[in-house]
Image (cartoon, rainbow, N blue to C red; front, top):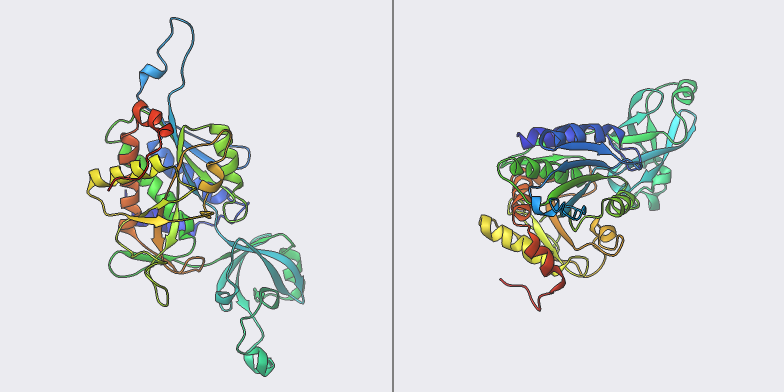
Amino acid sequence: MNTAALLKQLSHTPGISGHEAEIRSVVLREWGRWAAETRVDKVGNALAVRRGTDRAATSRRSDRTTTPRRSIMLATHMDEIGLMVAGVKHGFIHVVELGGVDARILPGQEVIVHGRRDLPGLVASTPPHLLKAAERSKVIPLDHLWVDVGLPARQVEQLVRVGDLISLRRSVIELKNGLLAGKAFDNRASVAAVAVCLEQLQQTQQQWDVLAVATVQEEVSYLGATSSAFALQPDVAIAIDVTFAAQHNVTDVETFALDKGPTINVGPNMHPRMVQGLRDAAKRLELETRLEPLTGHSGTDGWAIQVAREGIPTGIVAIPIRSMHTPVETVAIADIERTGRLLAEFIRGLDEEFYQALVDLPDKMTR
């Protein structure tokens, strides 16, 4: 698999929170190459299933009862941040945010307005010459920005309506040393990592079923993770997301270097046995990983998955990216591939002994 080519395709495909149909079709096609089945649930989550080989779980037929094969859920959200049309006035389109859009980076950005037909446009604002002196050094608030598609007012009003979506328009840029920069790498980088994992599992066998879920609406509500975890009832789960990479004006405590592997999160949102299992898998692969402490809300799908039904032991793995929630998020392709290999190795090691040990919490993690 060409991971860079896949990530470019995922990045270029729109899929704003709550409107993921286009990106979902790409995910289903790509994940489906290595899955026994794919399907879509009622809220739009994409599911790919790879069956395990543990026949003991399903072969006890003498008493006409069966025990379902154990399963692991891999959750990675496929939605991206974007804008929505709030109104049209004199041919200019006013917007509101969908997800955590940073207004500081919007002026001058190219966008696509998904109206009656797709319209290329630019985010514009009042030039500094026409602002009061006190306003020139301030960040322009979102309600003072607009989108200009260059059409007469009457035509804009015919083509664009309140509620239409607006996505950022950005082609992926290939940087040096295996780095790519583009939009929506949060969290399409993790979608690509799950594809790597599923491909890796083709080379061997695993006992447990693998339920790979590309969730919807993580950027606004965790809706997809909540509903899919409740419906699938996995025995354990791993949320795969992104974290902050080293960049200018931040400390090493807050960030993690690119091209050094993913982070394994540790804290109350993560089950200790899942953390230790991921660390053990990394050790078997001789793969460098870093522990990332999260002492409260993880800000990932793992937050919702952990408390679904009676509770699901959850782990969280994160891929470092620079410039999060901008059109130039930067990631190392090698980190995506390392993450996929780590997930596959962890899954290969799952057995009944691991499941039974989940209730036997360790006093501390081993090194």
